[in-house]
Length: 158
Image 1 (cartoon, rainbow, N blue to C red):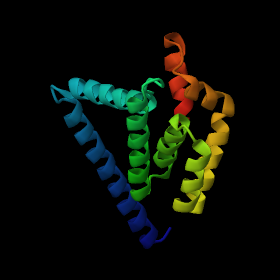
Image 2: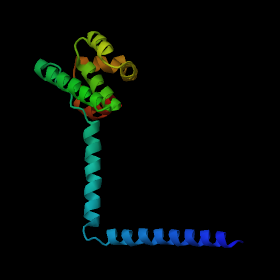
Image 3: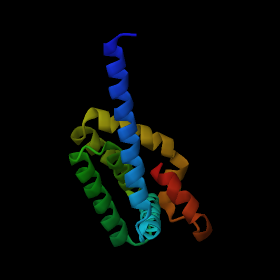
Image 4: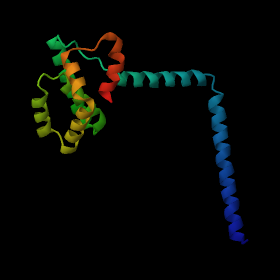
């Protein structure tokens, strides 16, 4: 074995050992923090609450025109904001929700076809196809019964 190879292996060994020591030291320091477990629990609860808020959709009372109109406008606005930020997935979800409560979805789709980029419009159509016509009709006729509301809300956003 040449001297150069020994030097390279020695330097690599020292660098690896230094890295492991660095990791061990800071992990021990982090875990010795008296509030470590409390902070960890807070982060887990916060991420769980954020996931819960994202998956829940509060559909308005379909008999209250003002509430439906307000929900529709909010969803379209959120969809536009997401599109401006290049967040296509959330844009599609919000626009799908707007179409679901819209009284004339075909006309709205015609407007979206003219205003949305072709790839976003294609994804919107695919998402609507996945949603299914039966769920769309159910959403337009009225909110689901309270017992099934939690299960149906997650289906809308998927």
